[in-house]
Length: 116
Image (cartoon, rainbow, N blue to C red; front, side):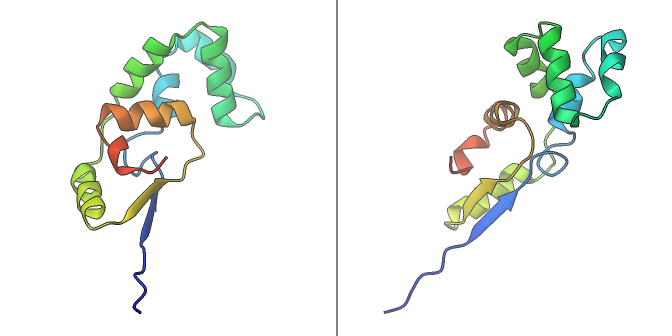
């Protein structure tokens, strides 16, 4: 009996599927005077960004609008569609914020290609 081999394709989001780091793109929209307080420090970048947004009452709607403004690398949707049609399992491996990744993929209609 022949065994069918499955193929798995794994992608990061930042600067791979999209054209920027999600957290950086949102962070750039924060008031520059506020932003400067969070640039320095020894905490991880994502934690500094999330702290800045949290302390300055950034709503989910505002974050979502910023994320929707981040472009997609040309050809990505077509590539995912082709991989999916060939039965390739596609996953995201990202150190980024899960909610931001989810919002981004849904906005561009890419979420349908990824296993949860």
